[in-house]
Length: 296
Ligand code: NDP
Image 1 (spheres, rainbow, N blue to C red):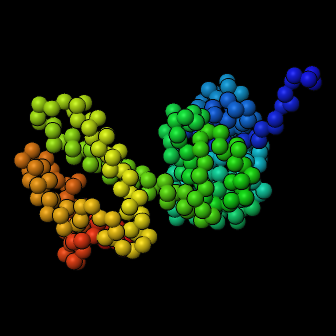
Image 2 (image 1 turned 30 degrees about the horizontal axis):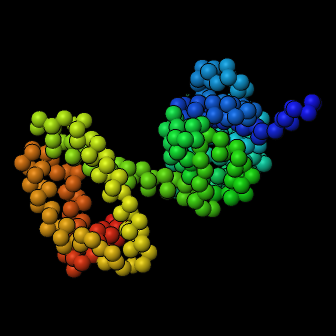
Image 3 (image 1 turned 90 degrees about the horizontal axis):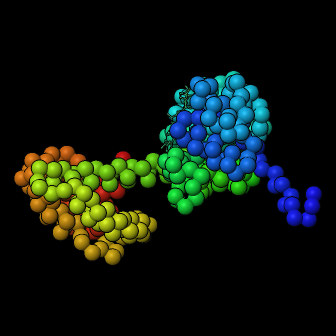
């Protein structure tokens, strides 16, 4: 080796099961970063593209698992993980499951892995495939479960996207993932209602869109106040627009929907919860009490 040559850094070898849209993006990120990669996919043809980029293709999931210590799984659902890993020997393996599941499924999978002699880390991917391997896109993965596994493989796991470990409880990554996505669907529901309101008018949806996006961004930081109130138990702390005032305004929203010929079915359930909380004598509070009405 000459003076100018940099000594090659040993990159951790990775086994990846699943080459769907997300698995393929993960594979490309590790290959681009120089990690030796063994892949397996139920439908072999889907492995051809990454094989051409340097991945070694295993002819079964069990062979792929035998090839390396670090095993990353990114399959459709929990049942497909069961099916794919049925014949694999997981003894001494570090299993990282990026398949979307419920928290209970993640906890059961952690126990399942432990019984088979593997360390387990669950992951929830907060990114879409084009964001993988593109740090500036801001995508990241929630991880939970074995902190030792996470710390040992932190660098490798950080190649496709950012990493956030949210607890030793294996279910917490899925829980954080679903919590954020649930809030996102609430936002989509609100936006759908807003577009429906202008649908029959001579208003270009493209002129509403930037106003809507800016408004949602301006409102988003209110979650910090909600969190503070939940922590302190005082839902009147820092209230700007109290529940009584906001509930009094709900007929305007429902009547406007009626006038515009728009179904209130997305908006009405939230208003009903506001009314229930108000009926409990919480008019001076923020909207935070709705959280407690939801928890069974
Ligand atoms: P795809 O539908 O593109 O791929 C699904 C993968 O699962 C394929 O590799 C498929 O194999 C495999 N599969 C399905 N059923 C079985 C089975 N019974 N046995 C073995 N393999 C099976 O999904 P994605 O790659 O997009 O998603 C993978 C995971 O990543 C999901 O849990 C998803 O929720 C999560 N995710 C995806 C995001 C996205 O935007 N795409 C965003 C965040 C998370 P085959 O090719 O043979 O069908």
